[in-house]
Length: 234
Image (tube, rainbow, N blue to C red):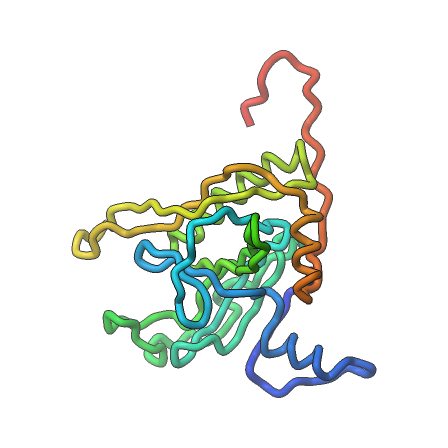
């Protein structure tokens, strides 16, 4: 996967000299930040694909080395523009005020009739079935979904200092919280429970076999030296 910030829109495709026109078309309209079936968590249910099919409970290998984050601009309930970068690249997505579309009066309304920012901060996490190799991309833009990916990323960061070639195997579950506005009730959120670890090579080989470019791999930072008796409080 590329490590540069990628902007994808529905505009015409510009070709560089010597570029494959079909590859350029694919990169423009369907960048590889979304691979396989789109995996979503909706009102307590895990669903995937174009027809929101229920996802059976199975172990998934989370490709956190290919985690992508950035912005998606929505128009007429469809993604119109995407600005993404991989976390591994260490590049930072632009700030919201740099994206434009700031006129709130021109924003579309959500299902509650409230104006909604067309730019949604979004994270894409590729995943594969641990037993069958089925490929998914989990899309996170809500507070609960981003928190779930964040917690999983924290677990991965700690583990890869000891085992940089391993990815977490997770079970799909649910959690939740009481919304501060009581009329919204209890909000269900996704939950990833780590049940084991799998080799990065296994994940990448599955991606290549399915026709996708393997993610770049960055070496994990070395753990700090442990030559003092006192614990370091940070």
